[in-house]
Amino acid sequence: MMDIEEIKRILPHRPPFLLIDRIVDVKEGSSITAIKNVTYNEPFFAGHFPHKAVMPGVLIVEAMAQAGGVLCFLSLNEKRPTSDRVVYFMGIEKARFRKPVVPGDSLKLKVNIIKRRGNIWKIEGKAFVEEDIVAEAIMMAQVV
Image (cartoon, rainbow, N blue to C red):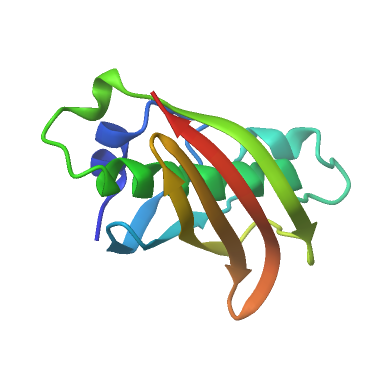
């Protein structure tokens, strides 16, 4: 398990763009499960949408990508600090949004490594609210 302070040691993102709150499971080189608690205080809800708050799908994908970034860093098995490394998002395939995510939801983000070639990673992410899948995507990233 990893709390927000440990996540901040790995990822360069900071609020309001740090979109994962906690890591509940990680298998280095394989998979990670992260949590994002969605509250009405999120800055994007002011404009998306004022009459019915819905988390933007692109931010759900970003949350999955951030969880994937943590997984990539942990899977490097290097003693070198991660502060001099960055994960760049390279592509998104097959993104699908199944149900809206609203304030009060707890997003469970499950990300698996599909393959790795050098510093290029292909990962698959799925986002759940309770048992319902709300979004999924295949993503590519590069660790530099």
